[in-house]
Structures are given as structure tokens and as C-alpha cells.
Length: 141
Image (cartoon, rainbow, N blue to C red; front, side, top):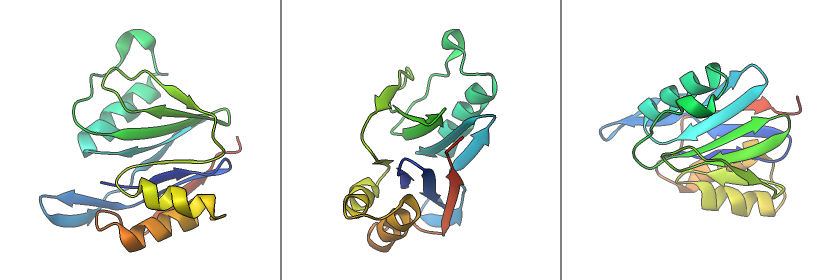
């Protein structure tokens, strides 16, 4: 349960995770070389995906990820969405994108002119599964 937002210039995410029904701070954004990504879903998914990115995203060594998740990866200013256990990416050609339980709030905020950080803040205000502050990375690399 999260919100990860990309506005074409920056990727931002809330920091709230959960152990059972107890919220904890659990950052969701990572920078590995020239790639930046944010992951919604279980912690094990984000760490398996991070390990795969650190290996250079080899096509013949994709992790099998189980459960509901959404990942936004920015590489060379292009936004990719991963949301299937086989990790086949979809290029996002929209000017902005969001994933996670707070995505609808964030997309609406960005449609009204909010940047990624503000969109995460707005999603956190309305989605009970988002919160704990905002992390962000400039993705104009």
C-alpha cells in the first residue's frame, strides 16, 4: 500500500509501510546507477527488484515476484511500469504516472497541475495506506 508518482521530472513516494496493522517508516525509492525506481507492494518485492536492477536487469535472470505490486522505473528519462510477476515492462508515454493504493488521488492531483511531491502529499491526505512523509529523486539524468 503506497503511492509512487512520476511527473516527468521527478519520482516521489510516501514512506509508510506496515507490519500487520502497524504502520512503520519504510522507504520505497531507490537509485541504482542511472536508474531510479519506486515500488509499491510487499517489502520482499522491492528488495528482490532492487537486487535485479543492481545486476543490470538481465533478461535471463528476472526474479519471480508474487503478490500485488506496482513499480515505476525511470531509465534515461523514460518511465517504465512493471506490474506483472514476469516483469515485462510497459513504457509510460503519458506526461505523468502513479501506482499504489493512492494512485487515483495522485493522478487527479497531477492532472490539476501538482508535481510528484505535492501529488504524494495529497494522496497521503486521503488514502489511509499512505503516509509517513515523502521521498523524491530528480530523474532528469
